[in-house]
Amino acid sequence: MSNIPVREPQQKRSIEKKAKIIEAGLELFREKGYYNTNTKEIADRAGVSIGAVYSYFKDKKDIYLAVSEHVLDTQLKPLLDEMEGTPKPVNIQTFLDRCIDWHIDFCANSKQVINDWEMMQEAEPEIMQFFTDYNKRIISSFVSALDSPNINKKNLEAKVFILLALADELGTEYALRHHNMDLEQLREEIVTMLSHSLTKSE
Image 1 (cartoon, rainbow, N blue to C red):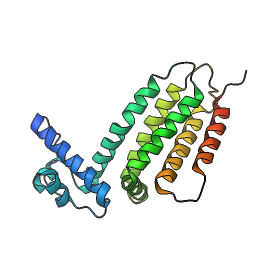
Image 2 (image 1 turned 45 degrees about the horizontal axis):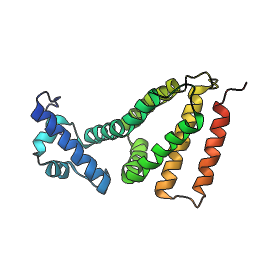
Image 3 (image 1 turned 90 degrees about the vertical axis):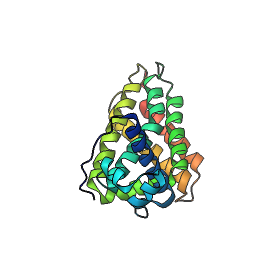
């Protein structure tokens, strides 16, 4: 950890330099994982001095949080924008398929990052809190998207939580193949269960 005061860049050049550090961190965390990457490697990959890194970030964990936020914002924003524009009444099948497809694609392209996220959340309370807060934002967005006359809104937040948890688990299985399961059948079961739960009875 450095004693250099951390600052928020204002000038275009400084903003670009910070962005390079985040991108370098992302590349290295994906290639080697968090624990096998050091701050000097990030500086070298970004083409900046180690002092420059510490002028924007307190330590490697601070870079990791910035990288995680960048990944989630970049990957999730299109999905959340799409959710906000969901036509009413909601087509439940389409909604569920889109959520699951996103998780499968994301997990397929971010295996090392996801492995690190799981380990880091267990080891670092600050990182656990970051993901808890971010998850609340996602749940809120999905609940708003499902505010439709044909949706059973009873315990809707809990249903969205279950949807995201199952979609995440399914995406991880597609990417890492932890278990010998028929993933298409598993997907079908998830969609059937949640469709039934979300459909408002006449």
